[in-house]
Amino acid sequence: MGSATHLHSGRISEFGFVASLLMAVALGIAAFFATCFLAIFGILFYNVAGHHVDFANSYKFFALPAGAGVLAISLVVFLGLWLRRKFRTA
Image (cartoon, rainbow, N blue to C red; front, side, top):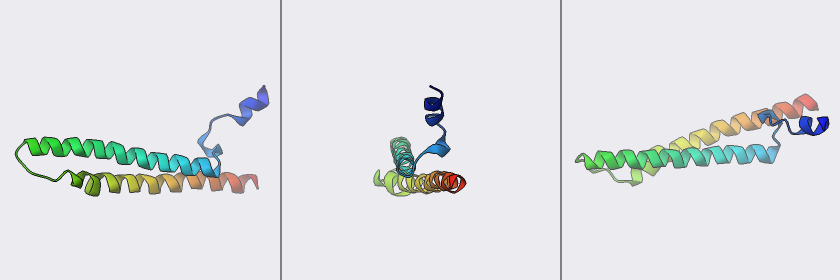
């Protein structure tokens, strides 16, 4: 019973390599879609106010940079945690 608790403590630093990659990609995709959602509604309200902005700008100028930024930062963080654990236990 005690060893099972130790093996599944749920700390982020105990993720494996593939789990770290999956978490980083999942965070990047979530940031992309959340930013895209907010940007589309922002452009919608801006267009209702009398302006004309193409909705494709929500992907190009808002969601893609946000998703790529979050992906890059989360890759550095998660893979850094994985490498630190690998070198600490080696």
